[in-house]
Image (cartoon, rainbow, N blue to C red; front, side, top):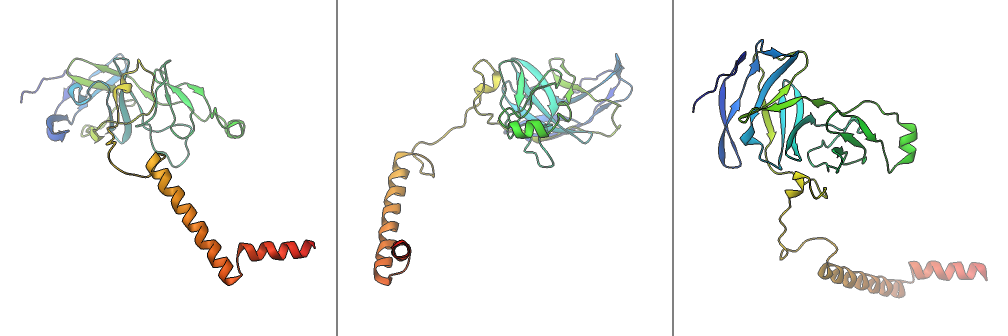
Length: 240
């Protein structure tokens, strides 16, 4: 496979598999290719991020989420500023019509373009009053050239740094705006498969099990004189 030289950048290629097809890993960093004060680093080929999908990568130790929003690629930190020590990340976070990403656990929203906090604990007024807005969502400048996706790393990167894809499948962001690319993602469900949930068959089974359990408990109490009926008798006698 040919290698396209990028000015000021040294490229090393390593291969891995993404969804059954071969992709060349750009294990590279800029070595003096700074333009306009920004250090543009090629992280993954554009073909490795199909429209409507998300990728979690690690670049120079930073956990970064690459995603599409209305035919534009964004790169943000894969961590919600509204979450504490534990975070599930933003891989499955919903997007809004006005270009914000929603924290899955707190419903706080952050602007994809500048990381500004739009809503802070909107469904929990107590935490909203007690917890100040700590920081904004970190957004990485990103650009594409038709072949690769580049992000700008502040302060430069090490000469041996490499982008590593740690998630390369489809996310399930839930209910998303109808005109947002990620609305294309759908989870395929086999309607014939059985499982635990609020479906008619399961509810009938649960109801029958509850009735049988109640009848067995009632029989046990009638035979032994102990249990709920015994408590009710004692309470009635106490009031009398």
